[in-house]
Image (cartoon, rainbow, N blue to C red; front, side):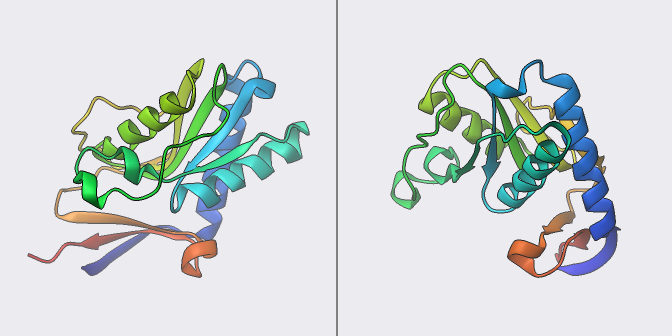
Length: 176
């Protein structure tokens, strides 16, 4: 892949996550019945950012669960599936799934299946840092940091300091 552009620097990512946090506070009717579920890998630190922002502004400490969707993927064979079933306390809760990039919708579909496997949630919402379009499944994010139309020849890469050493959103051109 060839670097094309930096779309968001660390400050822009933090602003977007603060805005997402405020939107979640405003739009969820009862934060005491809500949980955050970070989709590994970069959804987890993003969910932690949201959690810290919500604590700072409401005093409410939302439960935060980490989700590996590999077990629920429909695009890999049974023998390649790692991890086990998702066992968080989601029954009757409003679940806010958190991911870095919404693209085809397949990861989101797998995450919803995992949440329902754990217990019937009262609602499932989706928060993403970047929505780049090109859905294969009818998914829509409820909370979006940045809409970023892209071509299929581009790749959106999110870096989070916890996992990558720096924070930002970048576009790379795929090599032919």
